[in-house]
Image 1: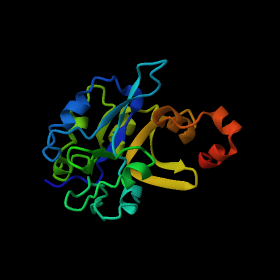
Image 2: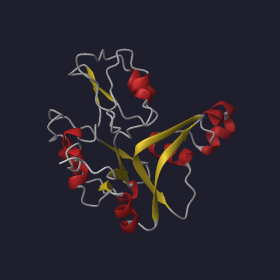
Image 3: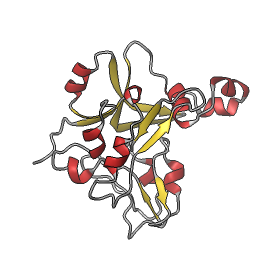
Image 4: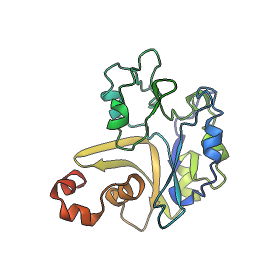
Length: 212
């Protein structure tokens, strides 16, 4: 059956319990050949065991595809940015370096870039991605916006992000608290080791790179 148009992917890092069920389930997706396409990162390992799942955000204008010299990364009509095509990928690492979310990884054994494709073999026929289907805390959720709003009244989905002067809109939503203003700089610092506020005070160049 076709996928309902209103189905979306939501990430709520605050609910992640680090069980790694998503990593194991991802390896079972038919198109992944036993390789997990999802990352489980520690927010700040020195002070907390809190983890956060990281999947491809499926950007409307994917930087990874824009910098690929071999045109190996394709975006489907319904907005899914797929893993590099093996016959085309030249393992140049451009996509790995360009992605602002730090998602693409170079698989040295296969000599190609591999990343989350939202289990396209499943979602394209109306099934949930493997990771979302097994997440016990529903930190990864696949459904309608109405469902997530009813389930998480204290959170709101965000899919527009600012990296310096670059505004990125994504197919995947990040859940953030309703009562707190969304600050991408602080989230980026926590999840992707971006510079601290004091670092940016001390270094005007960093401040310019991470300014909203």
